[in-house]
Amino acid sequence: MTAPAAESAAALSPALSIPDFIAHWQGHRDLTRRVIEAFPDDQLFTFSLGGMRPFGAQATEIHLVDAMTVTALRTGGWTEPDWTAGPGTKVDLLAVWDAVSAELAEHGPHTDPAFFNQMHALPWGEMPGWVAAIYAVDNEIHHRAQGYVSLRALGIEPPAFHER
Image (cartoon, rainbow, N blue to C red; front, side, top):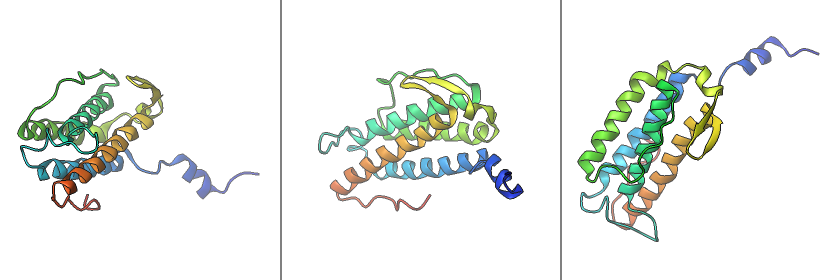
């Protein structure tokens, strides 16, 4: 028994096109940028709650994972970043954040579709490109939520999570 043509075509079509996935990711990056901006300069890299790292450290991790992933989308290579390096001020963090967003906007939509099905060796294990790319977004969402908790503890209303 063969599947109807519509079902067969749907099985071959991705849920999102590459440009749609990049736009979705950029929406998350824009929202996380607003969370970074919401922190007082003197609290971004110092305020800690319940044993969590300061949000500046978490945002730096997001930046490093995203930068590594965006480079891999363009080159296929996964160079592990220096996890101890990173910006030490809000201005510097936003500058490197914006640079990665610009690189993602320029190169992301043109990623070779084969990248997503190929296996890649990342610092934390081997996985298909689509799993690695989605991991970058998931990692960002996870840490951004921690930033929301810290902002609320500081008495600051975080950006609306649904405004991407």
